[in-house]
Image (cartoon, rainbow, N blue to C red; front, side):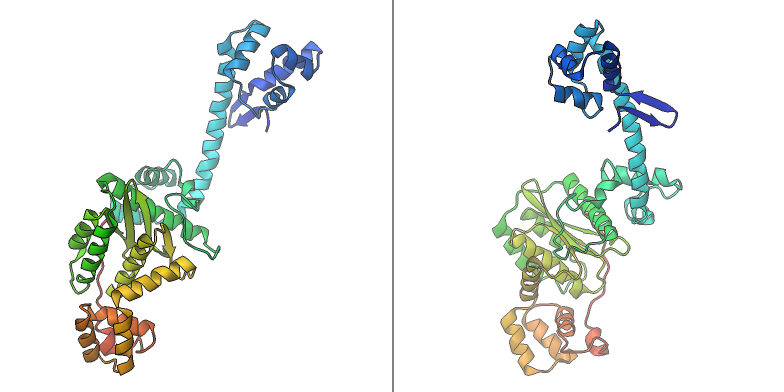
Length: 358
């Protein structure tokens, strides 16, 4: 690290620069100077190279040794740090501009009220930074910003990471704003059973949200960020839990599966972000939980043995387990018992789009 900085039309010198000049002019060695200053040669060497800030202790000793004020040396450090901060801020802004390209500014305008009239890129960056409540958009490129990724593949793209972190940050901020009561597992288990009775309703969000909230789980459903591969996320919020899913799945059966997948993670005490096409052990366990909750395994096996998968039989079976027929139809398509393009079966799958931050 250099003991001086040049940035734009500014130049700032680290206190170590001046101390080195004093040593050179005195004709004594650095070791001797360190002894006279009552510090170690190592500490002095770090200071001279600008790798260590001057401390109040050293500033006091220098003021006595050189017959100067303590403020003089501390001001030199402050001036150096100020220019260094400007340089770092500019370098960070350059990186933010690159990160910004992975985000859809119109998304924030449409759903969260950010000003669409702003055209300057740096101003747009400041708007999103303020909305997300982060010091820099560069934090969106971290693996553990709000919560860790569950991915075990190690192939997570930078764009996926940025978009996923942005969505979880939105959900987390919303949950923090509204507050989350203490998590009660037994209460949540009851709420989960109640959620299963809502699969056939068109407008279920309010009932689902309120039921989960009583158990200390804040359900957050937000709009999908363009091209995001994020399915959902769970995070501890104080003594409670935030459960986030997005609206990227237009089919009801896919939405319910995603939500119960995240519920499975909560039940297993696993908190993190789920991306599509992940196949780690934790993801497999959550998938199994969701499958068995939405369609009890024994009942499903008995139904499959009958081998009749037309719309009439699907409705009949769905009614017997108190589920929406679309959930059964989606499972049969996934398991390849019926073709995806079968119009009578496909017609059973509900389509809806919901996007509410809280």
